[in-house]
Length: 490
RNA sequence: GGUCGGUUGGCCGAGUGGUUAGGCAGCGGUCUGCAAAACCGUUUACGGCGGUUCGAAUCCGCCACUGACCUCCA
Image 1: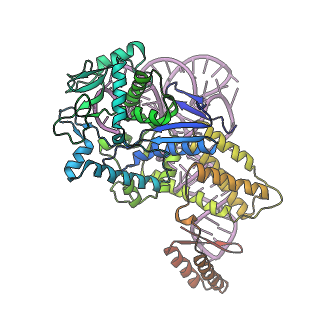
Image 2: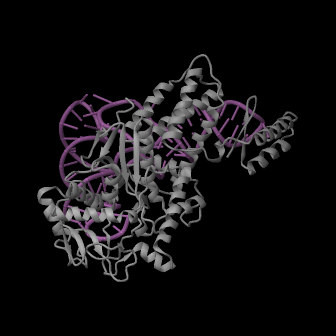
Image 3: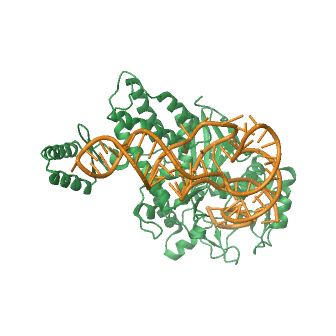
């Protein structure tokens, strides 16, 4: 039952039972970042989405090889006015750095942000610049199979020819004849036989910094190529899962399919998964639109769109409260709601570990566990997992108040469910309030609160309130109970 | 113009034919010296019109609004 995982496959537009090619092994590839600027909120969506899938696949017993690339070759910008320049090269020129210095700087920043979000590192994180030879080899293969042509030192994929024997557009639902009629008019297209042909290898102009020698002259690989090359190099000619943002479906993923088929005769990917976008004021958050908020901004609150700082786990929780195929709209209100909800859940975790068991249970922990698995198996429905967990938050608080009871075995099971779903699968962490406290600090707080209890007993409310207020100032929340006190670090 | 989506209560966000999603906010109550936290109760919903059905947020049709993509922007 735990293994009946259904995933929505963009290829068939249906939820399909996930069956790996070579169980218990699973190969998963996800399009990673282009490293020329800081990571923004939009980037966190695919990384968190596929991190949860990675974690879940491992949890249900698969041995997963997760490959996420780093695009460090750069790609042209400003195609329209013909002044196309490599983004990484441009950044390097502006900042008087080696291109690889720019790359390293942003790779470091990206990895730091991912660690803050508790996104596990992938199994392999290959860089495009380290696979130039393999990319050239794939270009040669596609050329020799007759699906590409050379033009003025560049190699283009012949989409029209490919489409005669295969279906170009099967992933995105596009029809090539319509593409012919409806394509935007772009400059610099005269080298191509057809406007929708895409570059496999691009001749470098004299001022282009990032360039490599090839039998076609000095140049650099086309953008779509690296993913076809690196995914099949590390996962085989056919593998299980390919993920990425919906905005990459066309042309990027469509071109990947074409390149794989044109070079090996096989479709590489069995399950195509696409996460939806994060929107801001109803519009996609993207670097190109200039409406993005970086993760560092969110963590520090230093952005005029933000009324406060939000912790990494608030961001993670916020994203997981929506199913990955839905858009999620950014707003301070929504983030504040996520922050409070997350706190409520984490407080319950602290309470859970202080609960005392009874002879019998008035709650059904096994049903909770089943519902959480069912939600995960239903195309990674994290908001439903969270809703189920919130039901149990209420149980935990009720048990603590003596309104419900739990048996010893159920208590163990409930702790296991929390460990599994909250921490292992959703990848939430308790941040500071859950870190094993310094015993001395705990003893000191208990001592101070005992003195406060004495003050309360003597009806010296001025003193007791002062202690409470002062503790709150340093982040200790005091909770009065019927027979004593409790506290937690905020 | 084309392809693929979306439109759920104050906010976010699940839900594909009949049963309370959940969180945040609000209101009332319990507890408390007061508060906080917690618990109990509770208000506001399915873009519009028509159809199918005993019954539709959920299926079908039309309309409105809106988003992503349309080839080297990722």
